[in-house]
Image 1 (tube, helix red, strand yellow):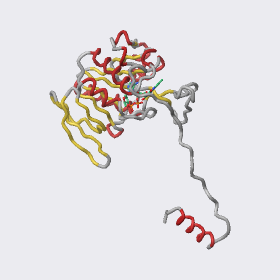
Image 2: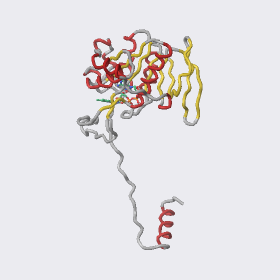
Image 3: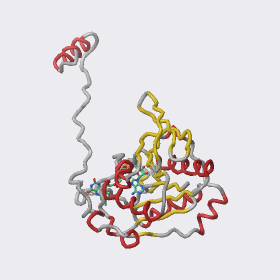
Image 4: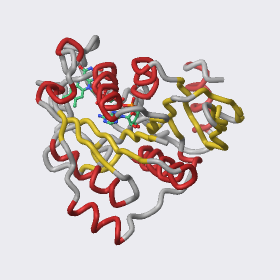
Length: 261
Ligand SMILES: Cc1cc2nc3c(=O)[nH]c(=O)nc-3n(C[C@H](O)[C@H](O)[C@H](O)COP(=O)(O)OP(=O)(O)OC[C@H]3O[C@@H](n4cnc5c(N)ncnc54)[C@H](O)[C@@H]3O)c2cc1C
């Protein structure tokens, strides 16, 4: 079974600043980590390989420093890793990202399952998984909380739908996005760390992926981020003057004025 796992490098903090000129994250001085949901995707890929055999390839699209999360993926059980990095990929929206990832999946050869996290903690859209399935022409299932069984061309999945679960059968090849309930990610092994340290991680750019130049980066993006901002806080606290019970009467009047009672 050939399994591809998509991992994105994200800022390891929610206290990020936005550059008002470029509307992009100020990344200087920020520690980068693997998107937490993607660790569950990787663990599931490794578990499926342990159950059914085959190979797990970790893929990330990002700047050269994203190689670090791929080395961690190798230390944690991925067999191979590939970094998609090229100045031409910069400014990609989710569709251009999914297109670029799809070219890598194609280049890797026949693929049975692509596993993604349910969403990232920075972009937060949850769009890349479904878009990747659409471009590849694969089946898509989101919010997977258990891969029960894979049998020939089908897999049986449990899917978390808010308060309830769905059991469904899906045709392979498929892209799935996973939730945290699916497993407990393992820690890197000593052997894995040694292997990861000396591994060569190929870097594929626009040329290696033989992409359509009109579908990548800013050029291939149908959306543009024109403004990123934190909403202004309009609520303010009011300290009630006086004493009880007058304060209570005042509070009731204020709540009535605001149509809250
Ligand atoms: C310089 C810059 C400019 C940008 N400009 C725009 C813009 O103009 N318009 C716009 O809409 N967005 C823009 N973006 C954001 C961009 O859309 C996202 O970084 C990217 O498409 C992923 O979206 P997401 O984080 O919401 O992922 P989600 O859809 O939430 O991710 C779901 C899953 O997909 C996989 N995945 C996502 N991204 C990657 C990746 N890079 N590599 C491997 N796996 C991945 C992971 O498994 C992840 O858990 C820009 C980003 C940068 C860095």
